[in-house]
Image (cartoon, rainbow, N blue to C red; front, side, top):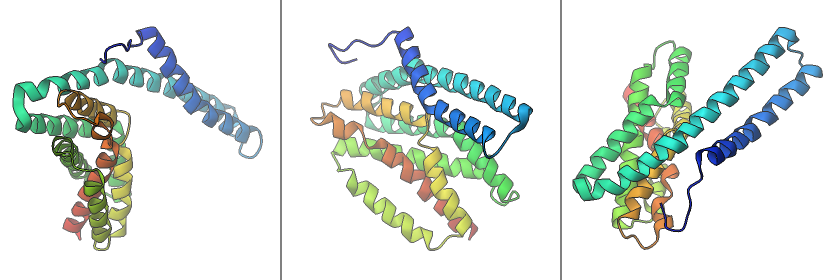
Length: 240
């Protein structure tokens, strides 16, 4: 924790997260209620189920984000600050990749995407194989983000060639893999993987003596986004 900055207590954090979740969920609830009473009636049972589901989503998302902020983010910062001294550069890369691969495989967004893709393709694209490729893609690009920090490489030198490669590969894969690839990039930038990986990154940067910590610690989301895209496109090449 930076000197002079006081961490919010649990109550303040819970209230802040509660306000953020309500701000995110309430417009959707209001919009659906307006539709119910105007253009698309849901029926009494449908409206009650929707409202009940909205309450459960609000509570679940609030608890999830509270857990991430209370446990995952501080853990990531602490681990990131301790790893370089204890394991050296190669150990840091290995642990960082392992954490992000396992986190990606456990992320509910990735599991939902894989399940829907498996259903839509009638099993032609196995869910486990898709999850594995997405997780490895995230892991490789989080390691690249660390290399960027260690060697002070500008973000654009990695991101721009990666997108050029993605668009080249897009010309050789089936359309279904192209759609899944860019969706995979979106689901991996969710509320589980990004906070933990970014906290690890911030922790590592804090002990490296990097002059511009802001530019070194951030840009990770852009890296995480492109990794799964390339991984799924490569999977599409195998199937093609």
